[in-house]
Structure formats: structure tokens, C-alpha cells
Image (cartoon, rainbow over all chains, first blue to last red; front, side, top):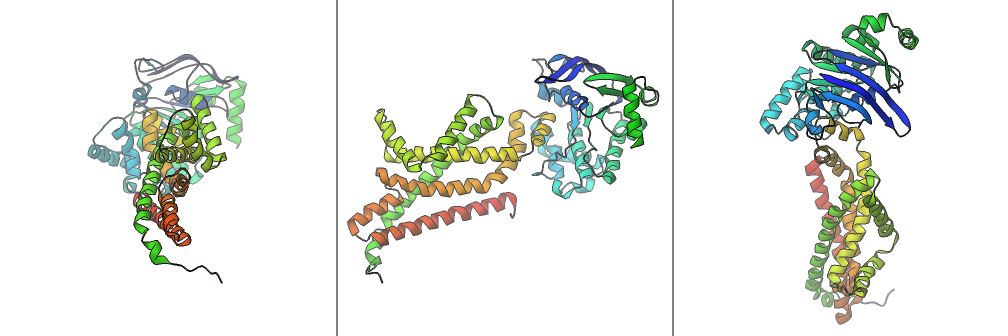
Length: 242
Length: 221
């Protein structure tokens, strides 16, 4: 379980997160939605400590992410993350991309790591691309590679930061399919997205962020179909009309 | 037409001495590059991260090394240190001065390389649980080395040519050996021509070696 309590984050004078409290339960898919600049991506990066927080607490499986006794690097092994930018490592093949972190971070022997990497590539539908370099993969394939790479650390949680936003429309489906597969398998996921169809269809819960606070949080039924606040109603009507 | 009559036979007798000097030149080149890379890499990282005392040191180093004549950098080490009672040999002074110059240029080369590797490459590594050092070692540097490879090689050739300034403080590297030889054999033009050819061949050798290494590491350009 991830427990977020009253988290505050600012860049200089600008407040990005203004007292966010939120729980992520085991096995659920929680979607974070909201306009740009609402703080949802920043919140995601605070969860695995990529962005330091200035106030509040974040606990992952009961461990404070700012704890001095537990290395953040160790904690991050539990939390896979995929970004909007395709960040496949261009100097490595798909297989090596996936095997790198297990070898370097978890010290898995090379042969074992490569064997596992084959399995993870197959899992995201890239079984035949093991020897390919990222430059020869489509954007959708690179994003699936990024997912496989995160899965290779056998995380308990997966964070997705607008992973389809930079993709050509025809490549979005394959990435979302991979995410649905993970959900079916019981992965706990926090997904920042602008894809309302995906939210409606796949989310267990939805949180709507605005100006660094949570406006509404609840089931898809509650937030998407029966929003209580004007700001959410406006946001959703804009999205569905576009 | 020129009245000068070339007497190659006489000059060629000094070829062994020039080859001896070439060895000193090569040695200085390689050592000054090893020092240059070793010192400039951490400074480039500091400068790229952009704050603190070491960033300022790197900035000042770049500024001075690139905006003053290399000759004066050689003099500064040789006579400057001497003025403070630190007497260094002409070999050591040339090595230190050329290293100083290399560091100034290489800081900028590596900093440019760092800037051209997308930041998300590093962040992705950290998100996978790598330490900062691991993310640099396994993700950033392999990409960066490919980017800066030819700039570093250019600097290496530049460093080799600059070691000829050692002649002015009495070093018998290639140019110094030629200078010495022609003062005895009086075949000035022939001797310096031989030295120039040797410099040219060594530069070509370095570039050829670098190109082969690059192809081996990264495939064709």
C-alpha cells in the first residue's frame, strides 16, 4: 500500500502540490486526471522520490520514502515507472535494455538476467524484437519496451506518467492493451492520463487534481458520471466534446 | 628559382635523434590526454550541474585555458613555478601546461556531451533503482563517449602539435630534437621538413587508430 499524507511540493515560489492525501491500495488501478499543471505528474514523481517533497509524508509498504535507514534506490526497485518520453536506452538492444537494471541494481547473473529479459519482452509482445535497437522500434514498441524494463525489477507498483501522450494515435492501443494485461494480472498501478476512455473502462478509482489539491476522488461512477464540483464537470464536458 | 640546395643525406643522419624526440612527443601527448580526461570529466559534471565552488573552478579553468596562448601557459608553468621555488624540468613543465590546456578544452567537450544526452535517460536509470553513479556509468557515459569521441581525438592531435612548444624551454621532443640537430648540421630546412613529416605521420596514425577504435566500439559512422 502507498500512503500519501498531506504532501506539499513547490518549485521556488510556485506551489505544485498543496496538501495531497491519498491511498493506493494493493491491486487497484488508480487514475490521476486533471488539467496540465494540476500537479498529477509531479505527484507521481514524488512517490518514488524523483522529486523531493517539502512537507507531509509518503509511505510505501509502511516505509517512509524519506527514511534515512532505507535507501531510496532500494525502495525504487518496488516501484516501476514509465514516462511520457520514450526513454529506451539507445546504445543497448531491447534485450539489454530490459536486462540492464536487474544486472546492475539487483546483481542478477548475466545469463539469468538475459533469460528473464526474454520472458519480459514476450510479456509485452516484443518477443521477436530482442536483438533490435530502439531506433528500429516504433514509439509504441519503445513504450512497451519501457514497461518491460520496469517489470524486470519485479516491482509491486507501477507508475505511468502520460505514457501515450507522445504517441501517434494508431500506436496508443497497443500500449493501453499492455497496461490492461498488467491490471488483469493484479499489478497495482497509478496512471496519469488524459485518455478518458481508458479511465472509464479500466480505472478502479479516479482522483481529479486541480492546483495541487484533490478535488474529487472515488469510483469511475462517482467522479466521471456524477461529478460533484463544477471544475470536474467542466473538465469532463470539454474532454468529451473534443 | 631558389638558390637553396637540399642535402638530404646529411640531414637524414639525424633521423634517429628525431625519432627519439618523436617518442617523447607521443609520450607527452598520451600522458597529457590521460590527465586531461581524468581531471576534466569530474569538473565537467560539476559545471554541468551548475553550482558550487567546483563549477566556478571549472568555469575559470575553461576561461583561462582557452583564452590565453598555449606558449604563455608553458612559460607560466616553467618560469612561474620556478619563481615560487618549485623548479620543474622542461619535460614536467610541458606536460603540466599541455594538460592544463587539454583540461580547459575537454571540460567544454564533455559538458556539451552531457547536455546532449536527454535528461530522461538519467532519470529512467534512477527510476529503475540505480544510484547516480550507476546511471552515469551504464546509461549516460556510453552514449556521451560516442558523441564526444571525435572532439576528444581532435584535442589529442592538437595536444600533440602543442607539445612542440616544449622546444622553447629546452625540451628535446621532436621539434626540440630538430632544433638541436639543425644547429649542428646546418641543414635547417631539411631537418625541420623531416620533423614536419614526422608530426604529420603521427597525427595520421592517431586519427587512424581512433577511427578503427570507433568502428570497433560503435560500428560505421
